[in-house]
Image (tube, rainbow, N blue to C red; front, side, top):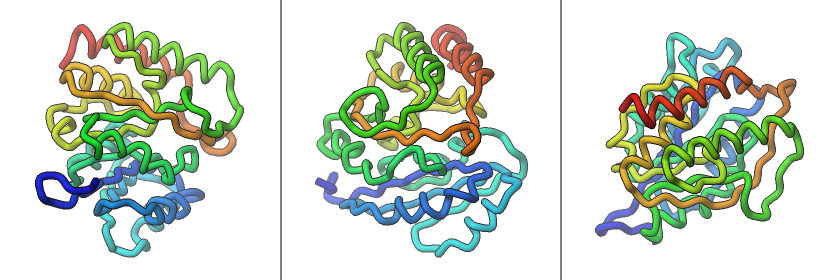
Length: 238
């Protein structure tokens, strides 16, 4: 299932990180441990962390790891833009540097693409029977509202637009220019993917969310920015 046009496919796993010294090593080891019938390339992007994240990245073994360092903190969208530019894989997958999402679920995320049924796959925290940590009610409601509004603008029927786990065929990403520097990336990429007319799938994933005390960074201002971006990239911008 890993052969396409006579060659072995390559997976680029793009990991943006900002002040993730507590979890980064664990995440990297989990990514490396996933058994896949593809070549794996790990793209680490340090978004000008102020803790030891950069030092941890520099000390990792060089095998299949590409490192990108920002001089100034720019945000998740900017880190992903840098990571996508450095990636050489046929398939690109986004992985957060915390422990909220489990790399062991890569096979189910990749399967629709490897089966040539999908061009883009979203991992949904709101469908399926996988384990979910019970946390913030209003955070969940905000996610669902933003997904609903995004769907109304894109005519998609996603259940989790704000999910970290998004997987793309390289050709899809190459058609898109990412402009958002921070968490506005999620509605922007969704609007632009929808515009391509490509095949989009969702699969249910587990989720082990963090509390704010444990390092969660997204907040209410990011929700308002996401709302702005839903409207902006539907009606006013490419």
